[in-house]
Length: 143
Image (cartoon, rainbow, N blue to C red; front, side, top):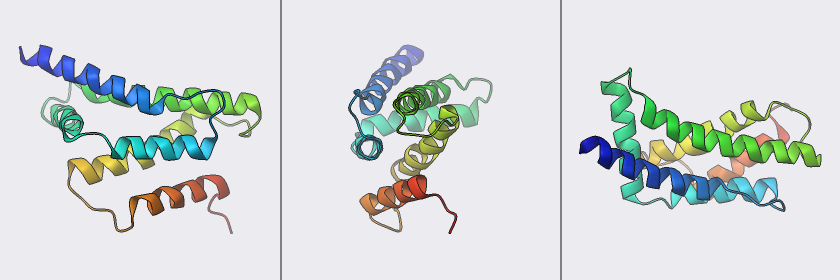
C-alpha cells in the first residue's frame, strides 16, 4: 500500500514538473528559465513532501534511488529538449545541451529544494537570485 501511494504522488509530482518545464516553439530562453524558477517556487507543500520522501529514500535505502532519479530525469530531459531546440534555431551556440540542462537544474531545482525542503531562506530575494543566475548564464564569469 505504501509503494502504491508513493507511486501515485510521485506521478502527480512528475506531471506538475513536466507542466512547469514544458515549452512552446516561441518561448524565449530568459522567460522560459524564469518561468521554471517561479513554477518550482509555487509548488505546494504537498509536492515538496514528495521530494522529502524521495530524498529520505535515497539516504535510507541507497540501492533504491528510483524516486529521486525519476524526478531528476524528468527535469533535465525537459531542459535538454528546450536547449536543443534553441541550438537548432541558432539562439544558443552549439554546446552540449545536456551539460547546460544539468547546470540549470542544479541552480534552480536544487536551490529551491534547499529553501523549501530544508527551510533555508535565501540571502537575497528569489527574483533577484533568478536574475543573478540568468546574468551569469548569459554573460559568463570572465571579466
